[in-house]
Image (tube, rainbow, N blue to C red):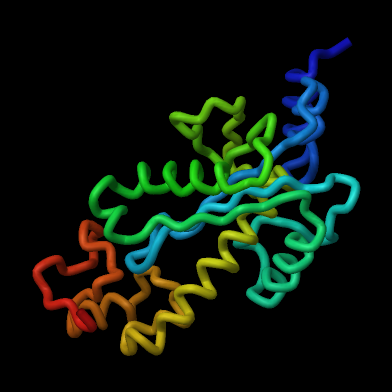
Length: 221
């Protein structure tokens, strides 16, 4: 009989879609409380990086959970509410731009992930993470390349993180006009980069990122 690991590899080759292959594999190894971990905002020029940890009830999955990048804003909003209603537990954490500039975006991403995990009401037995291995975490974990397209738990985390971060950035659009934040969500679009060249960065821009002029005045401070 094939081992759980070989069964997993075979299943992953056969179908590159969001499903429960990795969750089933973790259960075969004896883990019942499985959390999916993902982040949003690593490449943005403005605002925090956001991470979510989600423990799904695999018997009560909302239909349509997929990689958040494949979904429309309306689909993400609807699914986020369903995930919040049906998940056994979830937690969302932010690490702000100033910290990102101090410790770099990768370390800030790890910190957001650790905070999201620690925010869960009960510690998960196993973690499924999108493309990263979280240092300093004692819970067993597996890094999955393009995990948000393969693991329903990671996909759910990506949806919660994306919706929460987008709401935050959209809410800051009126406070920091001119950067088109409600449309670009803090990413380096042409309009955003042009605004940076004219207005300079705000106090919520990541000053160590290419495209953000570190020697410009800070509006709103």
